[in-house]
Image (cartoon, rainbow, N blue to C red):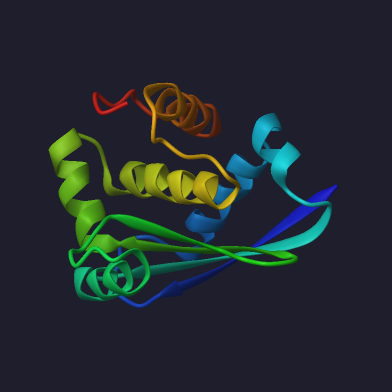
Length: 148
């Protein structure tokens, strides 16, 4: 049995409580395909909610892309599954763009980053469809996004 512990750092002002972030990732960890990739025992994930400037720096330093992005994942080792960084300004802008609330957008990005930590990718159409299927499985009340 896996016990997921989520550490949340709010480095930017964001309209969401750390408990919300924890619940989203705990729910995602219960999706059977996701649970199968998690190690048994106590595992950790760190989430940093930040701004575009920090996301641009992280993206440049670790991915070689000098622009802000919405979510980045950094694989961990051992019992630490990894770190997920999310840009709150991107959350707000994309929520407006896609016509849903900021919590819905944050949930999508959190699950997306978590799936990357566990080895999923979206380089092909089939991979992208699988990531969206898992996202909607983890977030059953979410309205389908046209970007899926």
